[in-house]
Length: 203
Image 1 (cartoon, rainbow, N blue to C red):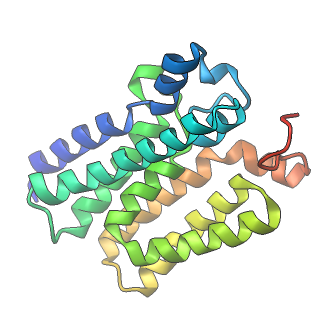
Image 2 (image 1 turned 60 degrees about the vertical axis):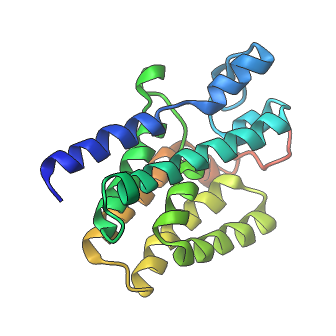
């Protein structure tokens, strides 16, 4: 792939990722700024904490959809259907857009739903293993953050064991690391024992 192609993937993927669906939906239907609610995050979990469960589901779906769309752009429009490196690069860039959207002064979400959509196209088998980890951890602990962090750790390990190309694996690992880094405050609260469980009242 040429440098120009990678630049195109980066720009298109970043701009797709930077669409702040959680912010837009809450502003449009509730006339509120989701950043002033709960954790201040624009993702589906915080939208759910605002009491708007329907909007939370829509946010989750749309954030995942933009992740998938970015990888599809790399696959179809840019003729990278067999280039896993280009696809993984698109996944990383769309997540960077979600986490650091230019429209919200680079203060975005944590990238979990966007990663879900991107990874579903990139490596569905590894994603299923990662999702299994999330479901088990969340069912036991009720911590969305802990489930997301452990799922992000699992994803590149599963992809490696399933034979994912090494250069693409490095980009995939960087995308997963981004999810973990964006959860740094949650990690601190988990160690302190005061992380909020899903469904519990916000402290």
